[in-house]
Length: 254
Length: 359
Ligand SMILES: Nc1ncnc2c1ncn2[C@@H]1O[C@H](COP(=O)(O)OP(=O)(O)OP(=O)(O)O)[C@@H](O)[C@H]1O
Ligand SMILES: [Mg+2]
Image (cartoon, rainbow over all chains, first blue to last red; front, side):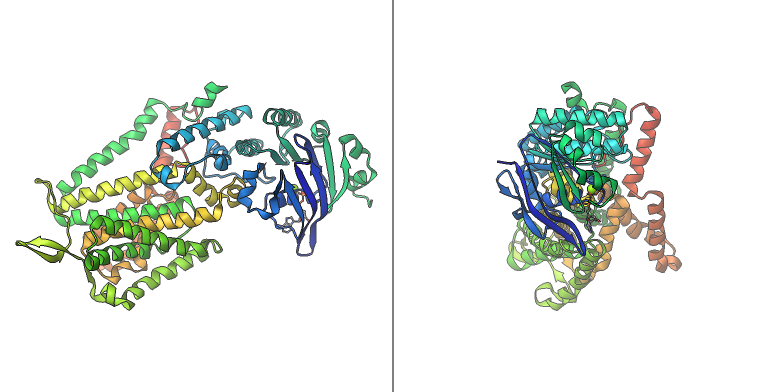
C-alpha cells in the first residue's frame, strides 16, 4: 500500500481553484518530485497535508491515518515533517533551539517537571540537545548552532528548516523549494545530500523544486501540476517527453 | 562528528565571559542582602511592595515577553490574588500559605477564562479585552462590597494570641529571628519567594516548554507543524501567568494588611506592563529590574521633586519611557546585553558566539 494517498483534493480561494481534484500516491522510501509552473498549487498541497488549509473536497491518507481528521499539530506525530518555501523559523531562538523545536513532539517534559527541572527533564534535554547537534552536524551546520537565526544567509536558513524537519524523526519529509537561492554547484550537492539523508533515515521525500536538473537526477517519480490540476505523472524520463508538460512549461495551450 | 556534537553549543565561552556572567549576580545578591539594614522601615516596606510587583511582572513577562500575548489586565489578576488571600484569611481563617496557593489556583482559572478569547483575537484586540477586565475590576469590588468591603476597604485579620487570649488582629509577619525587625523579616521572606519564582520561571523558559512559548510567539505555523499545540500553549500560558500575578497579589495583601479598590485600577496594570517593558521583555530578570526602576521613580524620585512639577510626573515618566525605548528598545536588560556583546566582541572579534536569545 502507498504511504501517502492524495485523493481528489480540491482547494478554493474565493474564485480561484488552487487545487482541482488532485490525486496521486507516494510509495515508501521514494523521492517524488512535485513540479509545475508558478501558481500551480504545489505549496497549497503541502499546506493541505500539514492542515494549514482546509480542502473543500477530497481525502488525504498517510500511513493508515486520515490526515484531514487530525488537527495541524498532530500531523507531525504521524511522521510528516516539512519545510516552508518562504521560511518559517523562530527568530527568537538560536539555530540549535530551532532544531530542538522540531523534536518537540518526540520529546517529553511538561510544565511542572520543567519548572522544577526534575532529573528526567534534564536527561531529556541532554538527549534532545545532542541529537539536534548531530543533525546540525550531519547537515554541515555545527558552526552556526549557537547563533541566532537572524543574519544568516538564505541557503543556511533553508537548511536549518531541513534540520528541524529531520529532528521530528519523520517518515515523510516534504521539502518546498529547498534549493532556492543556491548556486549551481550547491544545488547538485544538495541533491546528493537529500538522497543520502533519505537512505540514512529511511525517508520518503516529497520534493517541490524548480531546478529541473536536480529533480531529474534524484527522483523516482515526478508529478506535474498546472493550474491546480495534475497534468502528468511518471518517471523523470517519461514526464520530460510529455507534450502537455512541455506545453505547460512553455506557456502554450495544451 | 560527536566531538563537535557534544560541545558545539557552549564551546566558545572563555572564563572571562563566565566571570562577566556571574559577577553581576554576586553583586546583586550582596546588595539585596544589605539593603534592609541600610534603609528606614518605611523604605523597607516599599521594597516589599516592589517585590510583589516584580512577581506580577515576572508572570506577565511569560505571557507578553515570551508568548507574545499582550495583557493590560494583570493588575486585576494581582487584585484577585490579593482579595482572595484577604477574604480567605479574614472570613475563613485559612492559613497564609493555603490562602496564597488558593489565590494562585483561582487566578490560574481566571487566566484560562481570559485566555479563551485570546485564541480568536490577537494583538491590540486582546489588549482591549484585558483592558476591559482591568477597568471593570475595581467596579466589581465596589459592587460586591458585602465580601470585599467596597471602597471602605478590607481589613485583613486573623485570630492571634493577644494578652493571653485569641483575638482577631491585623495580620502581620512576626520576625522569629532575634536581630531582625518585623519589616526586615518580611523583606527576606518576600525576597526568598521572589527569587524562587524567578528561578522557577527561568527553568521553565529554558526548557522544551519555554521554547514552545517562543515558537508560538514568533511563528504559529512553524510551531503547529512542529507538533506544538498552539491553542493549548496560549491558554495554559495565560493561566500560568495569571497564577504568578496572583501570588504577587497575595503577598501584596499580606504586605498591606488592608485592601482598597483604588489600589487595583488600570494604573496598576499599566505599572506592571511598564515594569516588563522597561526591564526588558523576554529576559528573565528584566521584569524585576523594571519593577525596581518604576518603584524608584514613583516612590523615591517623584517624592524628591519640587511641588510645582509634581503634577507633571506622568508626563516626565512618559518622556523618560520614550527616551529609554529609543535608546534601548530591549529595555534595561536589552541595553546591557548590547553593551556586553560589544565588549566581548572587542576582546575576541574572532569568535561570534552572540547573545543567547532565550535568556
Ligand atoms: N492563502 C491564499 N489565499 C488566496 N489564494 C492563494 C492562497 N494560497 C495560494 N493561493 C493561490 O493558489 C494558487 C496556487 O498557489 P501555490 O502557492 O500553491 O502555488 P505554487 O505551485 O506553490 O507556486 P510557486 O512555484 O510560485 O511557489 C495561486 O493562484 C495562489 O495565488
Ligand atoms: Mg510554492
